[in-house]
Image (tube, rainbow, N blue to C red; front, side):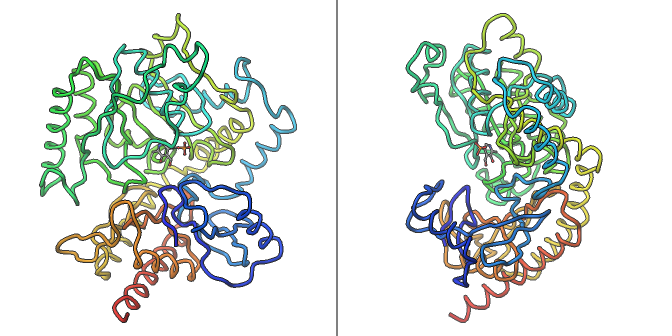
Length: 462
Ligand code: PLP
């Protein structure tokens, strides 16, 4: 079992016979494919041969309930016919076009995105994924404010690239030549493991804001371009911020001329039961980054939604950044279809109802009966089960940044029962496609519960 940040369930789970095609895929993978975040010779990637809705089939022919949405991106599940058809139609009409031209599919994708982003976030810069969306958002914030530092929370993930333009060797580098200096981390709210010794959400909110205020004062508000945070930290543990926190961060940003960047790469496009998770707090950021769920991940796409004030910074001076595939028509066609399906089928309300009627009650009931569960938390179709070896001390069942025999056993048991869980350190995230039927969500939770029970039983007997 290999645990990684971005490919948590990346392990072949049994040695049953692969089909001939799957065997070849596996062997060629091992010879030629270099995988993300992994020690290459310690992984045994599961072969996935097909997908449909909330299910995938592995190379041994087993049908698995996908409780991961892969890396939390197939928000509408696999092979949604309307998205597939939109990509096919776009491919037949015009596969690609450079970003300097206007294109109807790209324009429509931008219009639809802007129609759902909060406030005046009405301009869209398209990127290839989430990391470059964040890089561009930071670049915009720096150029807009003339300041350099960026504050972000511990326990966050914003993408795998570095500020790539700094290694570029032509004049386009000059306005961006900042190295990676000036990144300062602070603690966000996390009541279950409160860095502030809080015992209530109110305390956690107030103390986290006081802490941030101090960090701003000590770093110097006049040096800080942006605060970037995930509206609900995702991979780090789905810590839904306490009421008032994001509003307090917004007020601190306003008071000090700091750009607020909401990273909605994972939490956006319905995952939290709202189009964007900032809506739970009634807060409008200055920049909002997105990727993944914008088109269910069928073709790589990300972007930055830009407020009017920041847009005006680049109305008469060139924005010094760009990408060959900015607004790729195939990706934008998938985005248009995804958003239209979400609108037509009430998918965001479905995700909200799943949270209130299924995930919440079922996971809380599970927590009652499993000693290893320290806390369950989440909203919409975005939930974490935090596992501990001791409920009193809250000792995690795997160390921060690592894995453990127990976590490995849980994943193996879950896979054997036909469910793919998203696992990170000592947590299981239950994040199936947001259009998953309630009965499938119930089934997945039951199977994860059984897997926990089996792993616990074998642990205490060993
Ligand atoms: N931001 C958040 C919140 C993410 O969860 C991720 C990826 O998991 C990223 C940014 C990076 O996105 P990408 O992998 O598309 O570059």
